[in-house]
Length: 124
Image (cartoon, rainbow, N blue to C red):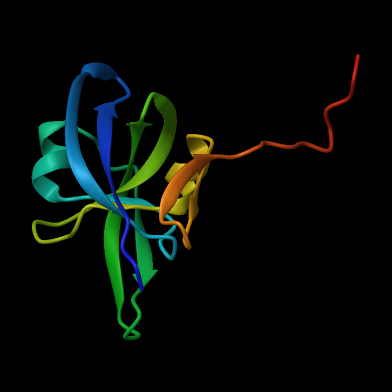
């Protein structure tokens, strides 16, 4: 299995001048992006709720969820983020990718822009 990492900028949506940049593992099996504790505290992100997460080994853990503005190569989007604990890893999940209009090609291990479609849009 190949691993893909990207340099991601994470901002506080209430203060975009406050941001961090770090290398994130792109995890196509993870819904949400994970920020280690020191980073979300540096950004002053606030928890909105607590969510249960099932791990591969069957354990269930709880983490707080907040919101951040993410940017990868000038593609931006708001996203829910897991407000991780001290030893949690930097992970970029699929919800965040989709909110930036991006997807992962797992064979080429590259991020690409997706073509967005909607059945409800009509030609004028």
